[in-house]
Length: 411
Ligand code: HEM
Image: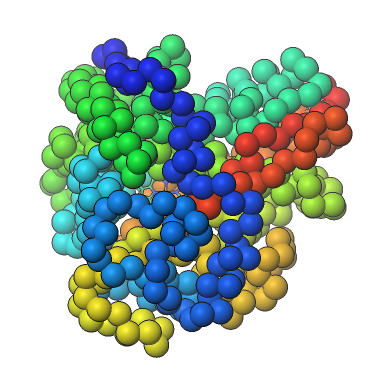
């Protein structure tokens, strides 16, 4: 295995970075409701309207926030008019040519090849070889006591652990990897740190790809290095950028979704009892979490021409914050949208976005989260909030997480 190099800046703190990057609101949704009262698409960028420093990229561009379900759906399904080039000065600089930054036809070809690495038989192999062993180890750890802090002991190490195993990372490199993964995301306030992380990860993955091409296994690096569609494989720079994106796309989001779901189950009376009595409701609980508190509150697009979106005229070259969280709580689509309702009729939510950029890892993510809840209920049927610890609070303006989740149980 190649050796991973740490950041030059040894003072970088991934936990503090979270707050700086993603904000600290406990309830961004009531503000989003107020914004939507001003129209389905309103002038201004989401971060500054929420009182955070606006991101520093392309400050001269006119900025809008897209809030209604109809407007978000239209924007996500018309990539010719609503381009992902909006990501070029931010993610594009740090990650290089990842799917998120690309438009058709380049996106179409690479996505088709990458999709081959996520086919159902691969997901089944990953479930057996990586997801189940990581879960089993974490559960053994929890059994050592009759109380736990689930964020540090369960929900963070779990999806990140799966990604690390998928890559085949040695255990002793995990902490450095976590720092580099978070550091990649801080481009809006510390581009030098983000770039440093990108260079270190690039070097690592270039060496690893060469190794796995020579001796492929069931891991994701081998799958991506050898994925092929219509006789084409991925160029090395695309494959390496994708592997770097996978660290944050696959780890951060799953960790946040499971954390928010467990927080909800432990705090809303009756919910956990209902799932204990009827395990077949767990997938519905995961979908409702993705609608009600999906971890990705906003994404972005740029208009390529003058266009009218849900009745609102927009100029060409405008930067749009697409508020997935706003669409997911639009009362025109979801009755009583602030209520977490396991029995809500299934409607399109945007927790995994939609259209050509919809989440490529969603089947793996769903599987991980469902199994994460099941394993806790199997092993700690009486799990409950720790009455001696502070109650959990979900925080964040653009990405959401409870920082601590203390529980007790009989072992
Ligand atoms: C609960 C967990 C997850 C959530 C909520 C989530 C959410 C999302 C969202 C909202 C997008 C679309 C962004 C946009 O259109 O601008 C996306 C795209 C993506 N996701 Fe996920 N994701 C999750 C897990 C994963 C996992 C496990 C992987 C891979 C192992 C992954 C890989 C990706 C990639 C590569 C894209 C870009 C797809 C494209 O642009 O064509 N995600 N995800």
